[in-house]
Image (cartoon, rainbow, N blue to C red; front, side, top):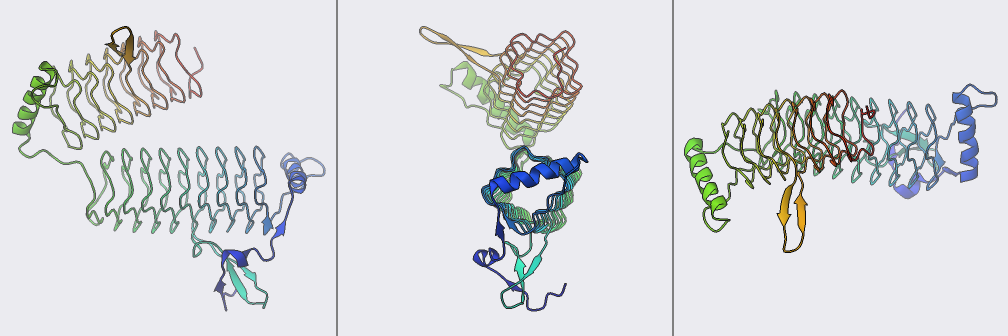
Length: 455
């Protein structure tokens, strides 16, 4: 189709020619479509090109292979809907609720998802690149049916825990989008705009971010291993806690970017910091100073047998550190990179390990139970926080996790033999292929648990 006399239109002009459809009509079409998918007599594929479905419900339907190209789905309820292989080219999905929906291999080129809710949705191998739909205007001229210069737009959307692995998102507009814990492995983000987006805990392993704009983005605990950052804009980005293994940053713009730093004259600095911390503990906080080693790279250090209780180690790189028999009671290790650390027999009661990365770490017989805090008339418990912690393939044999908060923790392939998990909160945690032989599971909260059959 020729693009002669192409005139970008306003949102009002886009409405011209869209036929409004009712819930009763759409339900009839969807019934026929689901019959079509099951090869039943009377079934017919849903073809809803350039229709106005605003505020209607598509929830719970199987709309695989349906055609919604150019349609308006503003404010629609699309919760748990299957739209695999569907055609949503240049569709208006602004403010739609698409939680837990499936868009595997769907065509979303040029679609507008601004302000939409995509939490826990699946976009594996979906196409969210730029795309332009043309339609004749009143005078016969061709007009552009789009919302953002032909680029797929997810601006201000919420896509927490969405799985977009291997999706095509080059040139996509993803400004100020919440992608917390999203799976974005091997996604093509070439020249995409992800500025000011929240990518906390997201996995961008193997993603192509060539010439992408991540200025001002939050990348706390983001896995970026083997990602391509050729000429990537990371100005003012917060990379504290990001995992950057096998990443070439030589051509990236890191102006004012925040990253972990090495302590200058580390041996002297550490000795003084740790000595002051011991005085602080022994004096009940009246003398000395609490150890604050947050946002530093302390890889390979030996802290075995030391008392680092209540120390601030948040966002610290602690790869390969020796914490054997170390006191870390109520210490803050949130977002810390603790891969391959040895925490065997460590006292971690009441510790904060939320969103920490501990892949391959050893916590054999470690204590991660609660700290009892006695009041004038009552006793309360300060529980360990391991929410969203990455503990894949960790050695946790004999560890004490009583009452620990472990919601959404990744414990896949972990060795939990003889571990004490009584009354721990494991809601939505991943226990796939975890070894739980002999583990104490009485009173454990398991709502939404993954990979556990109760045996």
